[in-house]
Length: 350
Image 1 (cartoon, rainbow, N blue to C red):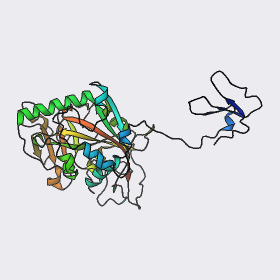
Image 2: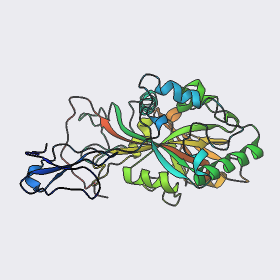
Image 3: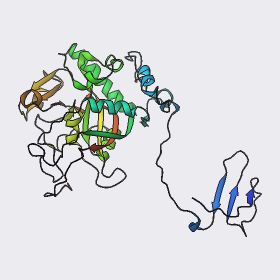
Image 4: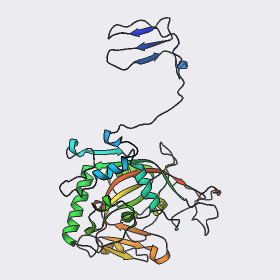
């Protein structure tokens, strides 16, 4: 709110101004431009509302009812004749050197739909409660979330990362021909228009990866640093980057930012992944990576603890080029109404 008071002085053209003496403010009206209001005392203004916004392409501002449908309609082709996905916005005008994070304005509900469909009310030793310790049997404090609420989503359009990913996919396809098919929950939960454009012969799919908002933004910009993968919570199935078909498993790996704009929020990536020929293991194998990679029998490892103990499957890839981080989401956890926050017994600062 601004107390403009007696605003009688106006600019009626460039270089033709009037003194604001005797007035409380100035109304600037330049031909063909938006009007501006000028005040001279900070006490005249109270900053009651703060807005954070992003510039969007017109395609991202579709009508609410048709947004998801038209998005998938644009994505129907398997883009055999196009190097980039046809629903990307920047490749046609930006050449081959673009990197953009496009706000997924009305596409966020589609991401929310996938997160809901792949959520399971199961927890492992990787999930900790409000006291920083693993959740005990029965979850007496209600520390297992009932789901997540996505607050913001972006699509990552990066020419360099996409080129490396496509090259890796084509190399696996040339070497393997047809891989043993895997039934992956994220793929099954997606609409047919998406599934039909994935390269099923090399088990191309979408997988979740949980981390902190700061780390997710770094991955979306630079790709995965496999030297650090698995360092957050352990490497039960050897070295590599770990992914999940269930959003609830990826959430176990997610950490909130302790400061900054996304303080208190969590983050995930929804990544394209070339799983290829996978070795499936039900028990821990810390040397599993020795059997994975170019020239090896397998392209990835599936840690199937779901079959062993009823929890989750994890997907481990050995090289960063096998992954394209296409969507980044910021979210909050949703808990049951009677959750009790236990007193903290360990530091969560690291």
